[in-house]
Length: 254
Image (tube, rainbow, N blue to C red; front, side, top):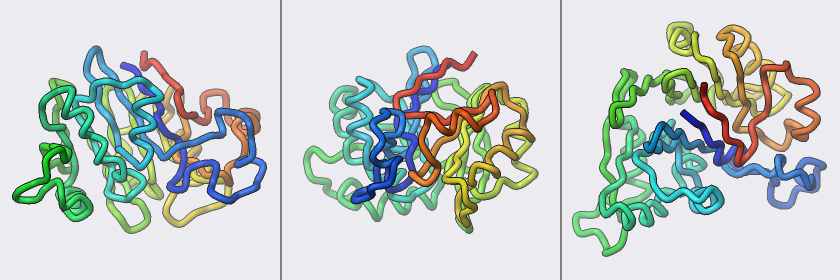
């Protein structure tokens, strides 16, 4: 298994439009963060987690030519805003894209992309096959996916565990009864928005608390804003088994 971090930024991305802070002006490529998304590759199967507004750019940058399924964590624009560009994969595979999402998220997609789901869709629109998931494990091409119920402020959303990898973004709270799904993960990806506390996302301290409790071999921070500081500076203050992810980072899950 391999995870490719397609985007590691918050909803505005980094740099933020019009911002002159040292992070947004940094020339370090690791400080350039597109909206959060990841690709999980197992043998020849590619599973995408979220397809935000930078989806097209991420696919081109990583030279991705096939996706077998898209898992959505929730319906916010920075996680679903690139779905129209699925068309390219429809064309190559000559089939509909398999999309896995909760019923509430599907309803949001139908509203956001009404032209896709029209009774008589316009020629060339994306083709999607919606699969309804709940907080129960399911399979994609023989690969077991374990959803993890987390809270994004008052919105219930999903993280996912796939084998020894757990991927969590946009969390502000993980119920104790859900944490047991994370325990035993060798690799943990978790959101850390900034240093200061935030009502709808973990900050660094809260993310580190979850990491310490779940004790993965290695942890990676994602969904980071420009308020979190430069990548190089973060490396100096984080524990040895924790590092900020960056766009384009590939990690083999051993």
